[in-house]
Image (cartoon, rainbow, N blue to C red):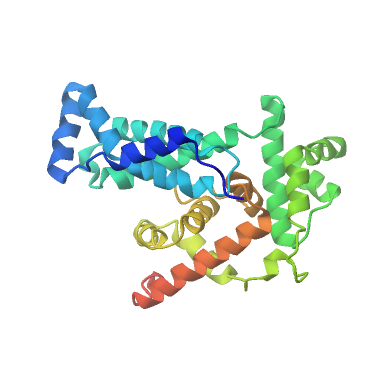
Length: 282
């Protein structure tokens, strides 16, 4: 069943759509007023004119995330405001491009913040560590890691590993990852393996020139494909993540995350081939 949209949210979206966009000249005048004179009205006008971008990015997460869209938009708006505050015209990039990373990071932090795990900060660090290694070992071994295997890589005692593995999100994902289709095939088998394309893209993210090329290709994907690949490759923050962690951020299963990742990577490969195989030459 589709999520119902509160009337207040509908009103917000309608209002944002009615806000005029800025021309380059208008933006340059406003950002100069903000930088030179801290003109709050100029700052607000820039933020308002870019709220469409916040809603677009937030909606890409909301389709598969338990956090309400209103909260994601609020978090994304905070990220947008920080981007405006940090923006420098000498960057040589548009505010929308620059702000995208800030908006995504703010939304991702909001999703993480809303994990309903009542544990201390120190235990949360341990949880993230066990999550990271569980994801990496699952990818390497193509099965769920054993307690002993997790003990070896984390350095935790067996009892602690067992305790962490019983956390709600871990047990929920373990169950969801075993879901099958009506035909009985595991979800991960529904699409062919796009690992070659993923590995190639994963490497190319690390160079500036290809990073810019990939940025253009990513905008051609669906919002969900784009978000998964950005998180998986650490495209925005340099922090590469495993399929399980990406799935948690996106609110989907590990196998579904793998499907989306591989589909997106193959699309990028196809786009690049149509563009003369520029990435292959790097």
